[in-house]
Amino acid sequence: MNNQATNPRSDEAQSTETALGTYSYGTHDQVARFTNATKAIAELAGTNYRYGKEIWTLIMHKREATFTEPTVPADDKDRAALEKYKMLLRMWIDDEKDYRRDKSKVFRVIMSQCTPAMKNKIETLTGYEQNEIDDDVTALLSKMKELVYSTDKGQYEFWTMQAAMRKLINLKQDTKESLTDFNKRFLDQQEVTEVVWGVMTPQLMKDKQEDEQTEARNRYLACLFLAGVDRIRYQDVVNDLNNDFILGKVTYPADTSGMLTLLSNRRGNGGTSKQEQALRDGLESEGTSLHQHGPRCYACGKLGHVACDCPDPVKKAMNDKRQAKKKKKEQAEMLLQHDDDSDDESDEYSIDH
Image (cartoon, rainbow, N blue to C red):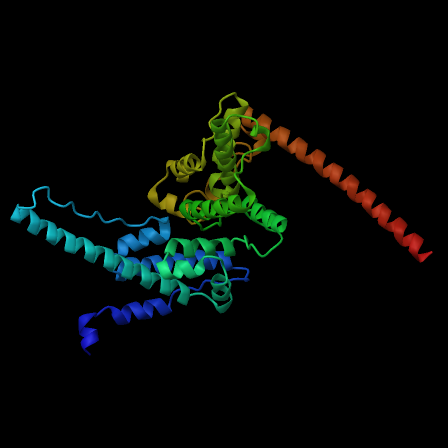
């Protein structure tokens, strides 16, 4: 009874903890579980812990809180200054102690939400014992992230490298996923991929100056991010960037952050907040249906006409060129398929006869 009176939120906090997601290892959805559980624990800490904001920032952004130690008065005979110093010193000590207590608490919560497979895997990793002693939340989450993003040091190193690179290249934004969430997933996968692969500087830039290599890496990653966004919402942006380049103007952002800003500013193409929300959710906004405004042009992306009647000559020419190239590729694939079928029939004939 006394405990409930002292901390009326304790029961609520405990029930919240039991409702958190789990960190799993060796499952197909381990990345999604890692993301969801981390967010849930950060929200739990932000709501229930004394230093909730600082712990939330630690979990989500890997930034430790710092508390400034008060300065000893220059005049040790100034009683008022000394009393103020003692008061500030006690406050500083309490801040440090309570913050460490909250860190210890969230470290235990994270471990309690691990499946047995994940917990066993983490506890065998080099440095975990010291992380546990230090309540190093950042190091713990980094180790877990490496595991769920397929950077297991127990695997053949080149297999690990291809798995991480393939995940980064094939990363796609879900139809109902916000740009911010997709950007977070992309940056997480990029970070883990570069841990096992190295800095992702294009090979052609290896003999350039360091700043040129860095710029090339950033531009490559920005394009990789763009390639993964939901085309239903952002195809116009892709088209415009490509058209500008054909016309001799490079408008591709210099890094992932710039690409995120460009896409965010273009969300909804200046529509109402209701339209923007519909686009953010991957749904077709009201008033833009095919029934009301006619077909969508695959050349310029606008409604009311088809690609062969596109009024934009540049985009129409580009679309015609794409279609011709596509048709040529399909014909080549059909020819190759025909050759393969002929070879298969020949093999069957020789085996049967």
